[in-house]
Length: 324
Image (cartoon, rainbow, N blue to C red):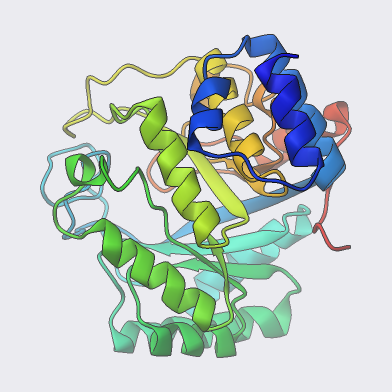
């Protein structure tokens, strides 16, 4: 029996695979691996597809030195736009726009290490207004907040917090030096204690190994994460990663497949960089991935909601929440 079939049987029996088994999967024949990952996805998640969109709620002048980011003050890139928190009216308008197109979740993302208490009060008012005027779920990515701040956000009406681990504990210091991996962990745990679901993944193509990718997802699994964004690095001129090689579609399919084996009931979410693979993620959506960020990203163009909806219909997916 192949390692792929052996581990499928193990997972179907209610067990989890370990690090060594995941590393073995990373060397398995790609077609067998992707077909098995899709089989696991259908078993655990049926035809459910989780779609979200993001809005750049506060842009630019970020104090952090994340080496992939066009918004960091540490690098000179073409992203010169900078503005404070968007108004409630602007955030509400975009929430209504996305809800009308069938989007499930609307995520407000802000630059910087964390929002201040004053900014949190402002955006909590915006969240309350959005919830009063729409039925869309609200996700927030406001940086490294504490439990009290997350409780305010929960009370305002948000249901999920996004905070990417970005990489493994081992590799994270190569990606960012202005905050730590443990600060990420602390923020995710604080959000969870506040009653918010948590979304956390990383960026592929930073120079990390497959071991690093697996270790990142094992950390997410320990934290109880069920939404795993998989970003493909878009090398931005002016950043330290401007000359990194873009991963191939096959490499991305292998990654999403292994992630499916690690957390079989998760929403494996293609995020930034999806347009770089050429088929808008279609092969990955047949290789274990079953969620996506649609529309434009923070500083780069994305894929329209309408284009995604057409692709998902073709693949037999239904955009809805898993518990419906």
